[in-house]
Image 1 (cartoon, one colour):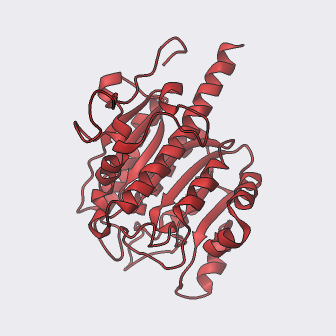
Image 2: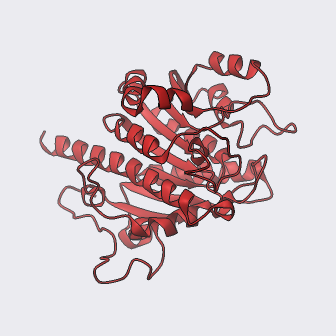
Length: 326
């Protein structure tokens, strides 16, 4: 999209009720309706990498349904993200549910195609296995990227039942493959029991810093966001959000819930505090609507994706203005 083109935004809710029509993310146009997008919202209906409750394959569409209530102006960031950049729903990446290795390859290839058009990705999972192929694709364009990983769990374990690709292993694989900038890696929201203290030792050796959910509670969202900004600097940043970083009171619809998590307010405030970071793509994963109540989890996930999309749209618009001023 050039600076002279006006982005096509959501369906007008004063003319068509929010509950009517297809549930694209935030009622935005489909990617095939606009040709290309600055930010492509894509689903990955895949949960064959889970170790406990299944169901995240239905997460993307649950988030889309909950996103019907999102509005075009984001007062928390003083921005209208869908007017600043062309955001479109790219539909789902269809992957083989019976072959994890093939699914990982399919996600990577589809992400390569979308990023190759110049789009940044806002991916809706699906389980956390999909973060690895997404990071591979992003790193092809940007080189090793900084990573902020919001989760109850480390997801840096080696294997489960001998399988190297699962929802608990993506970030160990990413470090091993050299696609992460190991000077700028952080987990946020970590809590709960581990297999042993060695889990923490191994994680530290990979370069990760840890902000626990208790740290967020004691120190507050603003201080945590400031710490994360300093660690990230101006590096290209990928944010991966497992919705179980939230307490089960705020996200019951997920596969591996852990007590003592963050509130949805804390998560959103931390993300808003990262608005100056160079966010190149992001994902929100592990929404399993079968365990949800009154769309609590899906609503939290849709607002999380909205904040991330707003950050990317603002940066795209600022970069366009800078280029046009040269």
